[in-house]
Length: 137
Image (cartoon, rainbow, N blue to C red; front, side):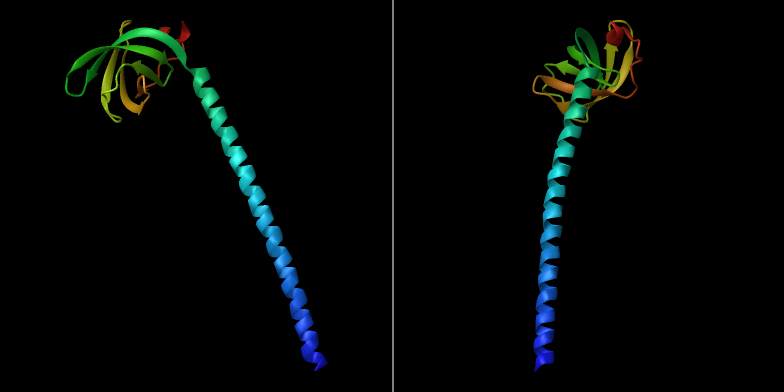
């Protein structure tokens, strides 16, 4: 009988140890999830800060030619080397391709990548040079 009761006690002790280890792993997992959330929030904030810093507020007219051949004049309200925000272009769907003709003669191809509420965001197919008048001025 003492062998059976000894085995029961040993099993009970081992079950307690496994339960304690499980609790520690669960707490570590919860702590890790919290830290990952903080990290991702910090990265998101950093990316948003960099995006804002790299954009330049402007007021520049641009002639837009769509794939259909239709043309329209619009106003840029900010620009970066990789894209621009165009004011009052609510009717242009994401994915729409266009050619932007700037007053200085620069011609860039772009694609609408987001609806902004005040217009749309366009990503340029080719980057503006860092010293382009729209960026450098």
